[in-house]
Image 1: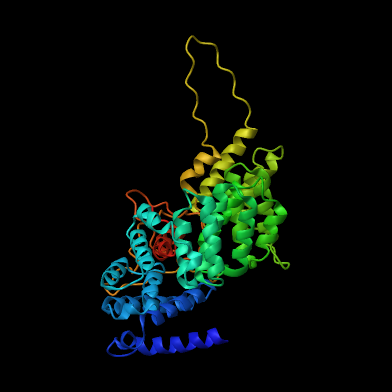
Image 2: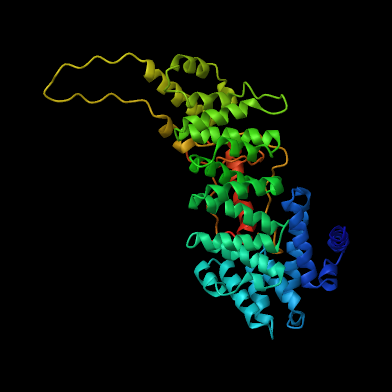
Amino acid sequence: MKRAAVTSRLMGLLLLAAGYPSAGFAQDTLQPYQLVRSLQLVQDRIAAGDHAAMPMQAKLLEMIDTRLREADAEDFKDPKNFRALLVYGMSGGNPVTVEAAVSRAKAVDAQDLSIAKGVINYLVGRPTGAIEVLRPIDPMTLPSDLGAFLALVKGSLMATDDPVMALTLLDEAKLLSPGTLVEEAALRRSVGIAVTRGDAARFARASTQYVERYLYSPYASQFADSFVSGVITLHMSISQDKLADITSMMDPEREKVIYLRIARRAAIDGLSELSAFASARAEQGRDGNTNQGDPRAELYSSLSTVTSGTIEDVRTKLGKIDRSKLSDGDRALLDAAQAIAGEVVAPPASLPAATPASAPLAPQPKSEVAATQATDAAGLPPVEGAVSEQPAASPSGGTVAAAPSAPAPSADSATVLPASAPAASAGPDTTDPTDAAMMKTRRQLDLIDQMLGAAPK
């Protein structure tokens, strides 16, 4: 109740400030630490699934940027304001503003200045310099708000070189800031690191916690990417019962989408048993609402048995699939599966007469994997509420977080986005429009997410 009351009062002040004609009311009235605390509260609501709070996040980032540009040495005599500057930098802030404000701060604690140097290095894309400065600083000795963000950033920076220490730091971030966007990001990163380490137990535990607490976060699509990849990578260590336990906490539509994605990846990778299991779960549905007749589930289950002894049944099933309901990538999969099935039942070719020189081999049909490597786009259905977050606009008109470019996310995603603005190409456009829009929006989402602890590339 106390936290809700504080949030309500701060939101009232911010709404008043947003509509004030001079646009300077909030900056003159609220201290930097008050504005940054408001930003954290809004981001925590977003992590919990309140997507309506995202415009307020954008407005707050703009207001804080303006306030910090005007802050002077007197403002930073209050340690809370300097810590707020550092938190702002690690939660989607403008690195130019952070660096300028640090240069104006006087009589600041030496450790806080070291953290500031590390944060600036991190923001401008110098991860080696950042970790060199931040390595000796223990997040657990700092005030919890600053320590949580520092643990998240250090854990993300060390994920590749020292994944064991990275997981420890991410655990500290969760401990220092439970129920927040910091915990959401730490759990999501833990899932990915556990996959690279082959730690199935850690993967299952972090995935369970994420689904329990943050399934409706706008970043949940990134968790879904890591989860599906983890199930494929760790398929020998993750039991079907454990997988079913985790997905049973999802709503029926998200569970169906996850199983469709797992079935597709497993079929392409030749994991017949996993593909058949996931396809059956996707068709099974929940609460008596089956998904039988979904052409994708039928396709993926057929792929898992395309070379079995029931090939005639598989060919018949493939022939009944409605191609118009498949994405471009899945139509390519269907073509490849039908070609393979045709080869299985085709009569053997006559042996050529012996000749001094071997006759050239006849072209072979493309294999399933070759036909799908360049078109791994699932074309999955919309999921209500799974909307990606947009980065906030800075006062200068750009994005607030001038983060290093993030790697392009996988097209095989369950994010819900408008099917518009397909990527341009020199030749005929064969890109699934939903996939193109998905990738574009998630690249924007990565800008703020980088500031929440994703290691710069």
